[in-house]
Image 1: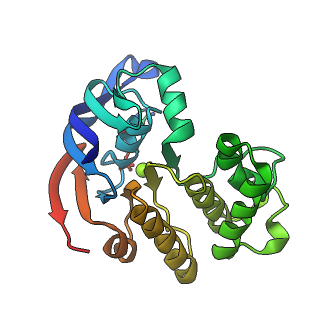
Image 2: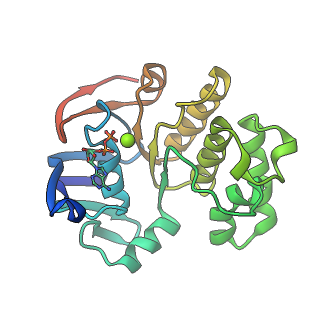
Length: 237
Ligand SMILES: Nc1ncnc2c1ncn2[C@@H]1O[C@H](COP(=O)(O)OP(=O)(O)O)[C@@H](O)[C@H]1O
Ligand SMILES: [Mg+2]
């Protein structure tokens, strides 16, 4: 069963400040994601990886094509869905984990991580206790749990980001460079946490340049070159 089917997807940026210059970023993208499948998305900087991921999360609106998402409530074209439908899906099924933490001012690390679960479960204590488990597993020093992540290092912020993305057990996880600035031990923990999600049936699209991470996570790889998929390597895992 597929959870995502992408057909003839394209994205062109129109730069109004440059006299409506058109920048083609994605062209005729076609691929599926199966339930419980982890796809590694690779390609040089500027090849369109983040744009593709943002089209799936609908941060960017695709210019053409469709993205069929098989939600619990039925199939939804993410290109055409209303903002209201997209917000509901982001709350309940789809999580996006960017390379950078979008810092929430004056909220503690624990509450930043717990928030997606506290929102759905309305059970703040349970959410905070799961957040602590995740931060502990990821090796964030306990002294930082009640501190504000705005002052954290890159690697510490990345751990907060990953924990926040997985705490509510999404059906589809879109994750951009999850292990880029992590030490080996923490990298292995993140890989383990994502594999646990897969065991529960979560599908994952994972941008990575890290061969170690890709080898351990990706069932299959998609390679982008100048906004097009050039080849797909199938790997047995
Ligand atoms: N918001 C944007 N506005 C204009 N151009 C963009 C925007 N986001 C990405 N691009 C352009 O789209 C192309 C692909 O970028 P991106 O998706 O970030 O690549 P990657 O993640 O593979 O490094 C680049 O040429 C980039 O400059
Ligand atoms: Mg990118």
